[in-house]
Length: 270
Image (cartoon, rainbow, N blue to C red; front, side):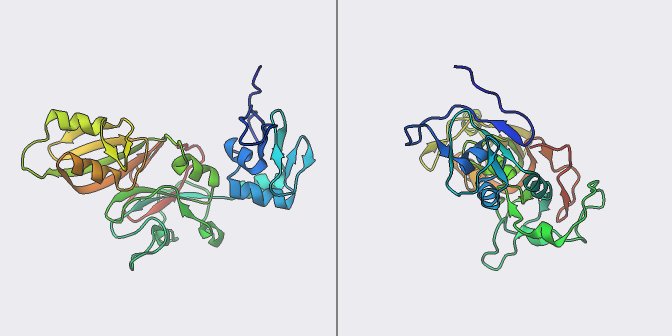
């Protein structure tokens, strides 16, 4: 049986689905919209309730509605407009700020998003407005003692892409280390960093790991367990002295100064 290919833009065709417990193979409309990249599930539910979503040309406004293979989902102009107003910002997080909610007396990186701290070389035509700070949440995290690229977004699609299950967006780090035994890291231990370690009872995905100089490693990961790089280094006898994230997918930190931020560019894609 041929599979219908999703169209670009606000209208997508529905691909075949597994049963999910329903004999007709149906899935929740909001879930399918999220799978197709039309919206986050939260956004989809909001739009459904507002009457901004159509299935096969008819408005569907009942939460929990389901769709089956072959039905076409479209979103109305107000939904597209609301989505276009959402912003994503890139912060060069310093040490001492937490990624999300304030904790243990430390401020969240979100407080850095002010007019005074916007990078002078930001080429975005967007100007900071109070509504840009509403629901601006981290898409991924950086430890309080780590620095570098942190993404804050209002866009549920970007959040899902960067932190959703099965996400494989690469993240690149520069990591300054010291040997706990005072000797160079053996080749077999470096190989173990690349593949073979287990954390939290799960085998880690293969990673790119290479020496940049005598005390600095470059890591490229496609997953993000809590304090993963620090724990990986601990496993092979290395102590992390400093950790900086410099790239997420196709978006790099570049020359963005520490403690400053800029908008995600129109042509930038993770």
